[in-house]
Image 1 (cartoon, helix red, strand yellow):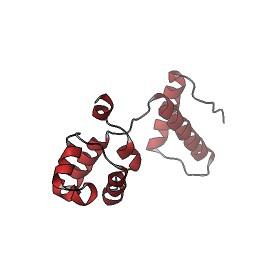
Image 2 (tube, one colour):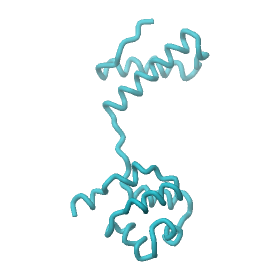
Image 3 (cartoon, one colour):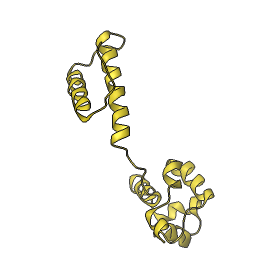
Image 4 (cartoon, helix red, strand yellow):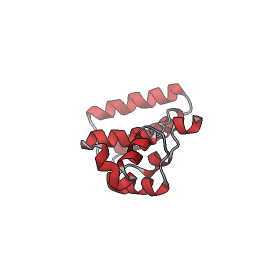
Length: 126
């Protein structure tokens, strides 16, 4: 089983060609082909994480996305953020989220805390 780390774009492309061939006929776990498939997937994931990182969304965009997903209105955010004027201040980026709001939004809407903690671009430039 000649498997090496993926150091270059060419290494990555070669691994992806081999991985894609397995998608049509995925090998059984625990077999030599299954082990090779698993190792190549792991190597590709590590390469992608290093070379194509995905940034966390802006906190306000994360809230708006969850609202859209759940059919929520600003009124639905009052238990987590506070009075309606405070909700609009947050949604319009006039006020940053507090730690209490972050905890309540995380628990109430299931938004990852990491996404809510990240400072928005508007907050950083203000």
